[in-house]
Length: 150
Ligand SMILES: CC(C)(COP(=O)(O)OP(=O)(O)OC[C@H]1O[C@@H](n2cnc3c(N)ncnc32)[C@H](O)[C@@H]1OP(=O)(O)O)[C@@H](O)C(=O)NCCC(=O)NCCS
Image (cartoon, rainbow, N blue to C red; front, side, top):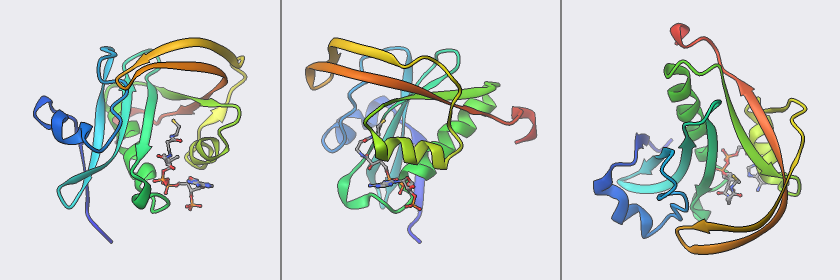
């Protein structure tokens, strides 16, 4: 089993990481990226927005490394960080059409708690440039254990 190291993305690592991973939310300003590294190379990132509750965004695994549990490992670390920050839950928005993402999050205990789906229509500014969106997003929520237990 390869050793995966998870760490918050530092300013010094941005150049190396943005050569291989999208870092679409880099300039968003309300949180930060957590990356997992395999043999010294970044293979996946997640942006954790420090909202209430915190929201996981831009989960992206390099294609050759998919389906090996790498996203799950990183999400576990992100959830543990939120727990240590005394958050009682964490959420994620997924497209109603995003079957893979929905399966991934449901396998990790994220649930549709009845928050109304949001229609998103317009242009969002990502690192790669303006991105036209016409989607309906579901919010999935995962309760976190009491941070003092972990
Ligand atoms: C979605 C994504 C992050 C999954 O990463 P990953 O490292 O391959 O995920 P894991 O190996 O941890 O998978 C965990 C579980 O998610 C589900 N899953 C992951 N990829 C799947 C796929 N292609 N088809 C069906 N289920 C899938 C499975 O239940 C899987 O468990 P299993 O392998 O034991 O069956 C990755 O495919 C990706 O980066 N896709 C492009 C970006 C994206 O869609 N991001 C999510 C939107 S925020």
